[in-house]
Image 1 (spheres, one colour):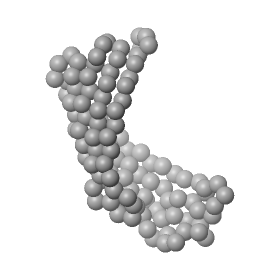
Image 2 (cartoon, helix red, strand yellow; image 1 turned 180 degrees about the horizontal axis):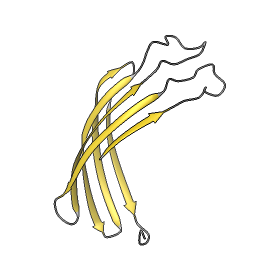
Image 3 (cartoon, one colour; image 1 turned 120 degrees about the horizontal axis):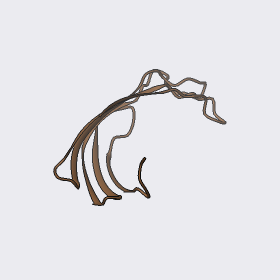
Length: 114
């Protein structure tokens, strides 16, 4: 899996700030070990392509960016119920906070997809 996303922003309501546009690149690979168990790896990079704009912006030259990587484990409990656990570590943050994510998803398919 590979995705490239571009976000454009308008002025925030009740402020004189227009956040700069952002770009995100996500990469991932997964493999089923059997019919129910899937493991995967994921990486991402996010960066602001232009500075913020507006009278309330302290430094329009600042452009936050961050990288991340992680692992995912998914298991089909039944043919309609999937549970997945994902861990991502953020690295190399510039002009923004850096942390780790842990995500637990439950996916239920109420009927056939097609």
